[in-house]
Length: 321
Ligand code: MN
Picture (cartoon, helix red, strand yellow):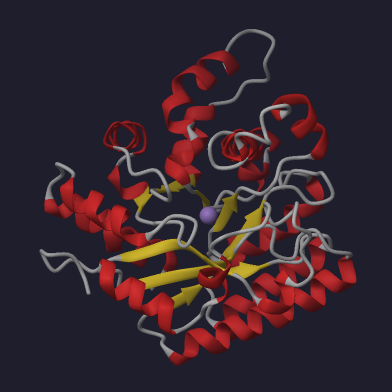
């Protein structure tokens, strides 16, 4: 365990599949037939062996997209409660190796706020992960503000994670290339556009003014937004726009993780825009394997103090681990 220098490694965007939830997912929503199903379904020996081999001490677990978000409301509520209970049971068997983000029944926003509270106060969860659209609607919509309100009250972050884009968007933006290049629709580009849009919309919606304690986490080095912050901020400051300080709001409320984007120049950009205190290590297991993530962190030219913050210190603080 740990890196060669003895740094503890906490990875915070690490996925699994609850068997009862995944049985309800359509192939399209799940992102097509997956070769990594064995790893997604494994909460046990294989997962722990691969953590040990790579030097990962702790995984903060979350359901893979779309979790329970594309079900009818009643079913989504029941499935979320069941899945979160089962996840808590697993975490309790090895509390020094695992922690968890809740799956929320977003088709029922009020129940989502209640389930967030239940999982945090009763099960010790560290926040919740939101996967893309619910009924075609982004999470900044006012119907979901009770979840932001509850997250603020509980002092836990909301992790905004990609899921399959809206079918009309797939048709207009990604066909006819999806057959030959399914990655174009998903982690190669489509997920990024979808999730960056979700992040921008959260800032524009005013929810951060209403609930100033809101903490948002974006994976994949901030879904490109740190690279674009200056331009977004500048364009939104032009005449015709409602006054707003986009870059300030983003820098104050957003945290980003390294999931599936082990790039030196991207990290440098993120450190310059957001500061090292807002960057947390993650792999995106099992969509991405553990060793390249840990090896990359070992290789980067960064002082040990800042590396410690990314590898464990910031997660301990933000998630109260
Ligand atoms: Mn992920």
